Length: 586
Image (cartoon, rainbow, N blue to C red):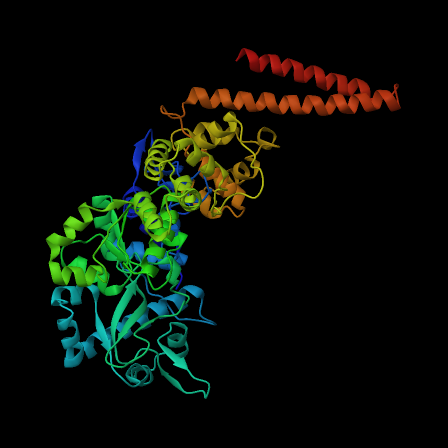
């Protein structure tokens, strides 16, 4: 499907970028912009800006930027068409007729087919659950209530190839179903359902669209848990179970509870703890940390209490600390998890466990102490210091780090300075930041910034556009950007930040436009500041021309002192000097 420019403009004009972005990350007002931590790279100082009046966003750390559609495309990992469609549906704007398809399917149409097939599979799984007493009995035994079954969309995949049969009956693409991980082909070439005899958990992206499934086997089905493989729609390392349901509550409470399994997530939700999300069968990744950073910087880790769970807790603790989070650890009794604990003790008991959670550094220290044979011997103290040092280094706030160093030193009965020395020896692990520029960036002159902003200001355009000539902009960092503006004006087309951005092809020019657009002074650009900037650029042009003539004159005098060209060059220098004086007097 392709949308014409009129429909895209309608979608843009009906959405407010500030409201859209606030649905994903926290922002605070700063001058004319709203700023926050960038959701697209790891940072500790906010460099992500949103300008509501200009309807654009820009990160000055990783240099991504754009309009509402581009923000949705990046944060939801969607195609352009899918982003426009999502925003249109949110605003209840009817989609235009897609017309006839020609040639091969585009990536965006492939994604549409993927989503459609996942929804059809979900309908099938839910329908099977409603008619299967064994599946219903299993969830009843697990104390999963009907409301939770509905809100999480739980279903059932019966034994056999029932989904494959539906695909064949309805003429749906088996190839697409294989790419989505719904069906498989064995070594003999036989196609079969991937999920059979399992309670089904739909996994959704942050927009609420199904992108994968997890299945819990009933009876003797093995393996016990089976998850969708990575697909064009789904990367398990980039998603969290129930994030679509929990994200608003996470923002509201400024805290997320992270657990390990599906039922460990559903049980707290059912008990009223709506800010719980779960990992998807893998160790915590930096992508998942960044996903949570959009909404909070406070985490309660509630993993299993066995040795593997504690090891995962400490690994996740370091990842969160290195990304600027405050992390507490929720400790449940041995062999308990959130699901079994809430079933056996109730919601209030779980709430008390959350309130009594332990700071991550203290939890790790106590674990290291209990695991060591001689923790307070000279060698034991050194080894425990080596283990705790990377965690202390990961604490971003210096005051907090200093306090934890004092606590660790007191617990180990050694001088805080010795702990600090060991921390300084640890080489910090730095995550590669997405979108970091590979080469030094050129910066526009203040006069260039004013000129570009004036050209994009509807009130100042009539004054600025006629003065935009080739001599004025030659050699400027923004030359190509200004040439494009002049071309749009000559075509008598609409000139705005968003329409200009659509027509730029060079990523450097797009970056420059976004950067300049967010640098308006508090009082805005005035006619006086515009005229002064134009004079400044005219002087700059004259100075460049003067240097070229002086170089040419020097060469002529050296090679041919009697050249007729020498008087002409002297006359041009005189004209430049006079014009320069005139500009100074304006």
